[in-house]
Length: 243
Image 1: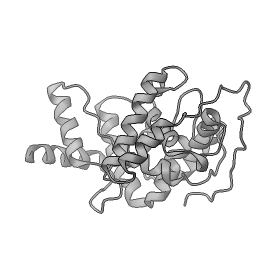
Image 2 (image 1 turned 90 degrees about the horizontal axis):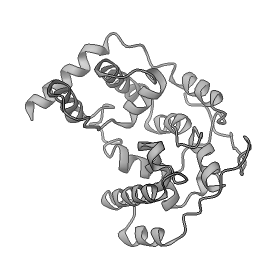
Image 3 (image 1 turned 60 degrees about the horizontal axis):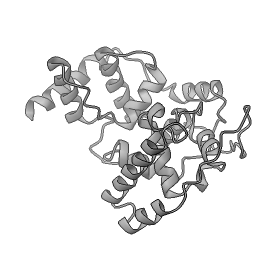
Image 4 (image 1 turned 135 degrees about the vertical axis):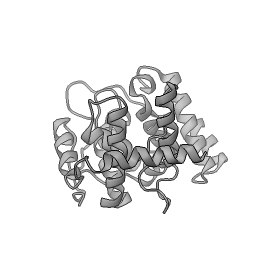
């Protein structure tokens, strides 16, 4: 265990000095959002989506001991590179955001180390709500939808603030592998992933098991994909810019 921690620390320190500042993160978010036809600035991600995202992707996100990375996960990944293990995953929300903004086309160990360093910088530069807002503005949900508001309109015909727990869980589930968990392409896989996200919400105490069962008993409300570029609900863009 101590070796994993030391490996994680070493993986962080080396690239930290050579990676760029993240003061331009909000500018990069705006550029990506506009490139993909997503409104900017978008409304803040609603509580149900944020809670589902944190419970599933990064349950230590709000911890005072979270520097933007999980040292154990980083150490495990570093050891995995040496021993040629299968990818162990464990990227925090900040690491995923760093990848989307700074190294979207880079792969391999070097890129992962850059993402670790950039994630730490993001964590110390921006407040947690701002990080979630940036993430939700640029993340890909499949079916050509970038950004939470576009995806919510495209899949359910309503703004993200109106998503049910089940719908928010399905949206978060898509993020892990949009080509696999797209509910229009693989509805069974998407439903299984939705159940996993709801189970995570139960585990961390955000909802009860009874709530999860009630949500699963209701129709998910997926709509047919709209033709052309017009989404079937108003694309709100009233939020304030991330600072």
